[in-house]
Image (cartoon, rainbow, N blue to C red; front, side, top):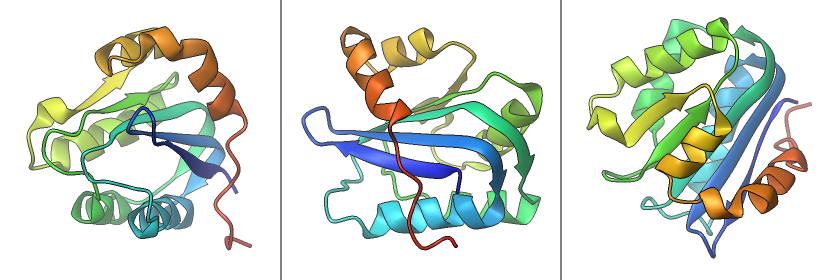
Length: 141
């Protein structure tokens, strides 16, 4: 199952990662799990690493649902890192549909730029190591 996250309480940061083929089910499971996580706070920042996503099987309906379910509050910076155009298109659709301040979510092609924007560039090695070890959300059999 190609979606997972880790919460770094010291950094007030959610590290989310997708890989392989991402589907509606995985995206919705991700947002529901994060919302239910007692460690999560709406003010946390988020780094979403989608560099290893090979295909997206997500409907426009799910993207709209993700906007409605967004657990992050106003002012919470979220950076999405993508490397292919299809994933960029999905992330851009989400960004356009977000009726909150659009500057809270930015899409990047380079992870270094995302880390800089989130003010966590000095922790790059540690954060990328944690991201690479992110486990899938359980219960998606």
